[in-house]
Figure 1: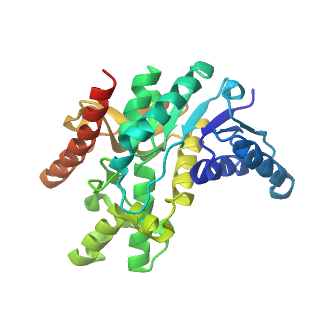
Figure 2: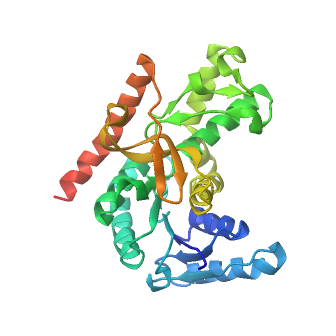
Figure 3: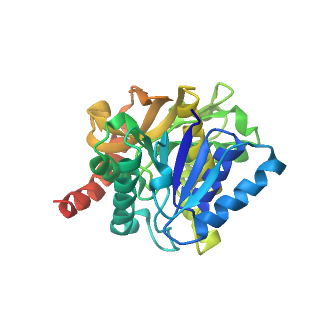
Length: 311
């Protein structure tokens, strides 16, 4: 049986995610959007690229959900993007309604799917999808840490003038200003970052990572990042569909791990065909524990607002 991935939201992130999934021949793709003609047009455009690019998958654009039936993975990118001066948190209530509706419709058609959330504010949207879907926590995953870690690796490679491929890094916590780039677990070909850069340079790289999305928003003025978010999402999709069991930092529902309960927070996990197959609880130093708690508290503030709304 052919595999199927539904991507909800045919904007820049969704369209790029769909195209990358097709280009890697990971699965047939259904692109869903509420705007009439947009998913159909973009889907057809991607399909017409197939003879040139050399991939052989079906790509369907639709405004409904019937075509999504039996999806292995549902990626939710739909929502309002950030604008200059707007934090991820400002998007909370508007995107709650978008994600709630998308989740309800998707799970009716694909009750066995794995959900990957991309819509911001990411951690709160994951909580929304989990509550609406009723899925086990292993099948609701947020794309955050993969992107944040990619940004951290990028800035380290640029600062040190080394290959991106040689940089190993890890970012924990919520997808926002309180994220926790874990310097202690960061190295270049095994050489600790602390031996390659002074504290001022490290602080600069950490702060740029936290501001990574905002930096792009300031440049674009009318939108937010989409190439790197799409690439990060597809890495997760590939690990699940191919059962690669990659260890990636993702937003997952914690039930006591790291002393956090009832929240989606970015931590390292193993991704395979069942979704989240293992949560790695690494030993943190006191300062790291404090930073992670601060990040979790920021997520809790958003979830508390939603809990009031859904009562």
